[in-house]
Length: 77
Image 1: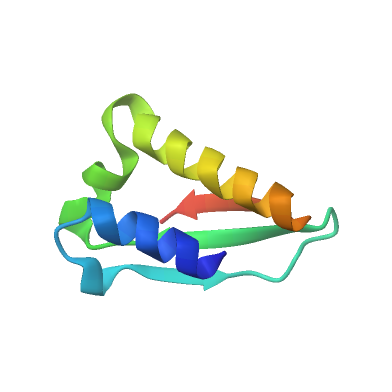
Image 2: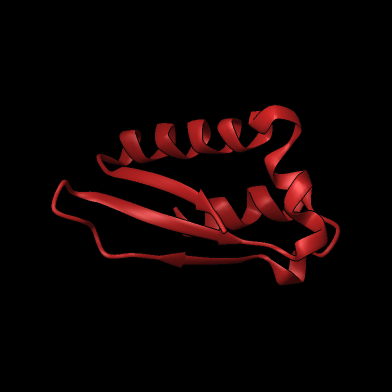
C-alpha cells in the first residue's frame, strides 16, 4: 500500500525524491493512517483544485485496501 501511494504521488509532483510516506499503527477501529509528505511547492499539485486530486488519491487507496481486506485513511501533511 505504501508503494502504491508513493508511486501515485511521485507522478504528480515536480520533486519525486521528496515524497515521503509514514504509516501509523492501526487504531482501535482498525484503520491504518498513511501520512503523505511532499515538498512545500508541490502541495498544491497533490491537493488539486477544490481537493479533487486528494479525493481521487484517497479513493484509489481505499479501493486497493478494501481489495486486500484492510481499512486505511490517507492524510496529506
